Length: 192
Length: 203
Image (cartoon, rainbow over the protein chains, first blue to last red):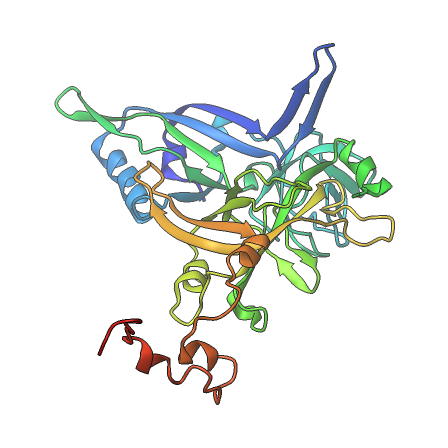
């Protein structure tokens, strides 16, 4: 399912973030330690919308209940930022997996950087390394352990669980005989 | 003197582990349904027969002071009050949170393994770093963009319970009869309470 907000996006900023504990000594030694799982954040600017498109976006925002704004959405393929072969629909979890290691029925067709999601949880991961024909290492640990035969989504098929961080306002821009509706920037972050 | 086992020390120095805290808020040690077990990580952690659940509930702690000095120190635990289970547990009329026991544990979570690191005995390396009792709590609704509802639980260490006790009893019948309901040592106190002898004065 693709959110209307993402469907009408004009430009997108897509980022990964994680909490880092960093210290630099006076002598120049650096200690950088990871402090949380890795999450994704997205900033969107929508194109000027005509009334019918604006109504669809507003309907989606209102359907989330004001102030409680979580979205489950795929990223449109037109944005071309989610790597992974969506035809690999037969790959499943081969045996119980936890931590950053994921045991799959096959890694054929997978590449480093591909987006991957296990049916046990909403979290989206990226493939960090391909260890062998069955095992991949993820960029962050599995939030919930994966069980044998859990289904796996690859590439555009992954669905992000996002929280809308801000409340974009709307500017009405006069057009040729009708109005355009211009939203300010939408800021999303991935949540558990 | 506290020692850290070699496994914990080794993991603390790698890139794979990061510190997490476990918090137990025990309002009734005989009824686990009134107790909360929370952790600041992202997976359930089983410790001492209780499952410490993750989530948005624990917002943070004030600084935890460890000292050899005999003194009272206090901390504030900030919880996200949105889950109804927490509000019910702290504000239900049949539950008295004041005096409840709060314990904070320290551990390290290994993301590569997906579990808490283990000590040299292959047990979860979880260390108690503070324990105290609930002194007061408050619920605040802040008018921020995110409209958070926070529950602040102020806790003081167990020494406050000792310092706040009163030694001795009042010279009243009710005070003496708290220990022995048939004690009549003070039965004549009400009768002489207004007694005002004027020694040395002629009748």
